[in-house]
Image 1 (cartoon, helix red, strand yellow):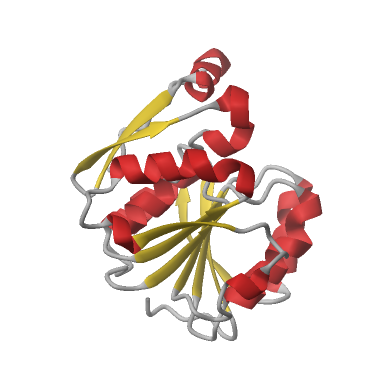
Image 2 (cartoon, rainbow, N blue to C red):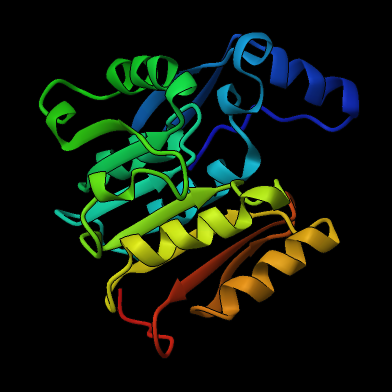
Length: 218
């Protein structure tokens, strides 16, 4: 399970966000993630939703071994790193401005024999989707990527492009505002959606989405 760098109180949370690094333990490995709030903002900070989804994957209810996985809005790369350590072939994506920083974290935290399993690639939602094969992924992962309402349509377009009938989407997020509920309604208009986990200490929900009827076999 993760060693979560979190303490109660707004001042402590601010120090966490501005810390140059954060340390976790997943898959029997210590993972040290560089952060750079001042230069890259939200893309360069580990958020609780990523930690909760990493812990959920590590619990073992989902077998990622040799599965094809894509992470959207990867930020620091923690989630994609953990998915790779769990045996997946992972395409770790974010916008161009975040890629160099993302690549540094990925390379620093994967043993040399696993690095070929993780590919860092640019993806701006709704654009250049032809660079990603349609329906080619077993799992799509996203942690705390539902926060800008103006990106919702492009995010949904991207999910639809990447999904096959068998693809499982796992989205980890807090539900804080009306816009968050609005996104869930939009998601349910295109996919079958169920809540599969809730971390009450972090107030983080994990939702599973698939085309067609919900399935429980991962």
